Length: 418
Ligand code: FIX
Ligand code: ZN
Image 1 (cartoon, rainbow, N blue to C red):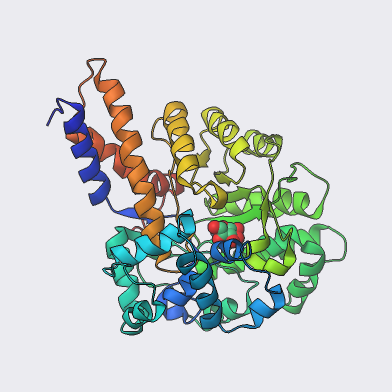
Image 2: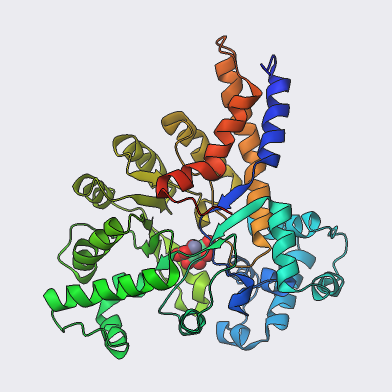
């Protein structure tokens, strides 16, 4: 149906954005059969490291004292400081309220125990089904770390993700801390040498191959510091050159780079202690130009890098830009970078991922993004319609399907979407 006005376009965009199912390509969630490493419920929501960082601005509690509190006591402190004593208007605070509302719990009381009752009545499986239904997410990709003892044992015991959950092989300790990881690999009988030689290359490749056969990952991922350089005569530079690139190419899986995180600038805050820095784009430019047959999924953490990343994607079709990562996942920046991406890349990118660490965050991260996407897409279609170009409802449906799942599944050339 040809859309005749901006109101028609808005209605068509809103309906399509609400209806189209989403593949959430980067989360820290787990299939329920992976056990208690899947985090969910209100106390986990309130102790999300984003909220811990915000809490610490209002209290002078010793960090160690906070971490020694129980999860419930931590959640009560966050609730009191950020939701009772003052208005919860930050993105992460508002996210808790949006989540409650979408899950059918109008957040109209400041009594935390009222909310706890709702979550206590549910099982993890029920909550996964409810969250994916409410968020309209029908597939999600986990972050799977073979160096995490608990998760490693789940895989070695033969657990496989349920349908709709997919693996991503995460290798930060291999690339960012090889000096210490060498010993770990040897303890797992991968006989890497002290110096980087053919044996080391063979054994690191064998390690990657083993975990690809265990996990069947959709991609291989790493987070990288602002100082990331490539090529580089360093452990990281050599492992990427001699192992990651050949193995991902052989298996036709993308190498996902999340660039710009300065880890633990305040180590006492744990996951809340990570910072951001502008990265030099030449590392990515070199990777892309030297490896045209490799595929790269990339997101960056600095606002200043977003324009360069979008322009680089115009130069290299083996680069798929994704998400508004972490400190980028705020409406003011999501709005800016999504408009810029449409203006530079049309719809050839993946607009968002939830990065959810707690199951229910999938709800708010996508709800908030969808509201922005509706505005931006309506304007973009109206700009084009105003030239006399015909916009049909089916055009919008086609474009949103690309943005919400097809760009990802086409890029990885796998049809595992359930
Ligand atoms: O490296 C990552 O996957 C980051 O997303 C996380 O380390 C980070 O803590 C996070 O959850 C940000 O949203
Ligand atoms: Zn993440």
